[in-house]
Image: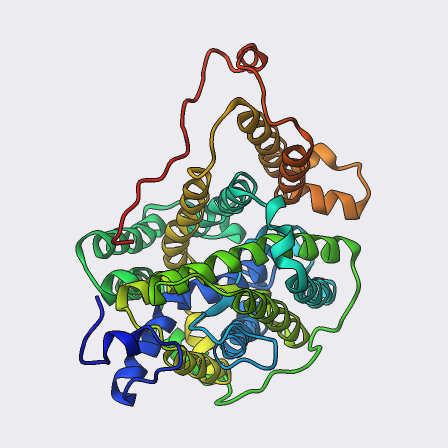
Length: 480
C-alpha cells in the first residue's frame, strides 16, 4: 500500500516525482534487495558449468574469475537500470524499471561453456555483444513481431527455461556438480542447509508482509548462511581470507576474456533476444498499469527495449551477461505505490557501488553452494510457475494442445538426453541440446502455419484418453 507521507496520490503516480531523500533511499535499496540474489546467480551458475566455480581448482586462488563475473553482474545491472530510469536519447523508457542479469539465457550459456573453463568465455561474450546489438535492432519493430510470440509461445519458453534450471537447484542443494561422485553428495547436512533456506523463504512469503515478503529469498539465504556457519560448512577464517584477498576497489576491464565469434553463441543469443524483448514489453505495461493506472506508450516500450539491448551489449564488452527488466520489481512498485524513477535510480547507484567493490563479491562467493541451492530451488521453481501462469492465458483448444505437445516433447527430450544429437555439427548440437531454442522454434512455426481449427477426433487417438478442457481464463484480482 502507498504511504501518504511519501507524497500525494498524484505525485506517487508520477515517474518524475522525487520523494524526500530519507524516504527515497530506503525505497531504492528495497528494489536492490528484491532482485539481488536473482541478479548474481547466473554468474555463479555459468562459472560452475565452465569449471571455475565452487568445488573447482580455482578455489585455491579464491575464485577470481567467478568473483569478477559476480562483480560485473552487479555493476552492469546498475548501469542498465540507469539507461532505463534516466534515459539517453531514444534509449530507456524513463520509467522505474530495474534491470538485472537474465535467467533466460542460462540454458543457452551452459552448453556453450560446459567444462571448457575460462577458454570458453571469448565466444560466450562475443555472443552476448552481438545478441545485445540484435536486441537493440529488434526495438525498432518490437510492436510488429509481438503477434509471433503469443502466450502459447512465451509461456512454453519460460516454462522450458525453468525446467532446464531446476536440475541445477537440486544439484546445488545436494553439494554441487564437482561433488557428485563423492560420498558427501546428497548428505543430510547438505540438504539441511538447503531446506533451511527453503523453509525460511516459504514462511516469509506466506506469513510476512511488505519488504519481508519481497526479500524472502535473500533473507532465507542469510539465515541459511548463519546455519552453515553453526554447522561448520563455512568458517570465519574462510570469510576473512576471502575478504582479505579481494581488492578494495576494482574497475571493469574491457574484453578481459577476449572476444570471439561463435555461430552457436550468436544464433542462440539472438533468438533468445526475441523472448527477452517480449518479456520487457510485458514488464513495461505492468509498471504503467500498476503504478500509474495507464497503458504504456509506444515510445516507452521502444525505449525500454533499446535499453535492454544496449545494456546487454555494453555488459558483454566488460564481462557481463545479458540484462533484462526484472518482473519482481514490477510487483514491488505495485505494492509500494511509488512510481518514481528516481527511487530506482538510487537503487541503481547502490548496485554500481557494489559492483566496483570486489569485497562484496568476495563475501558472496563464501556462501556455501548448498545454501545457494535452497534459494535457487525456489527461484527456478517460480520461473516454471511463471511460465504456467502465462500458459493459463492460452485458449486450450486441440490445435494449441498439439503445438504445445510437440514443442515440449522435442525441447524437453533434448534437454534430458543431449547425446541423442551427438553426431550433429558442433554449432547445431549446442543449439539443439539447449532444448529451449528447438522448442521455441517449433512452437513459433507451428503457430504461424497450422490452421486455426483442429477437430477433437484428430487428437483423441494419440492422447491416451486424456483431454484437457481449460479455457485459459484468468481470475481477475484487483490486489495483484
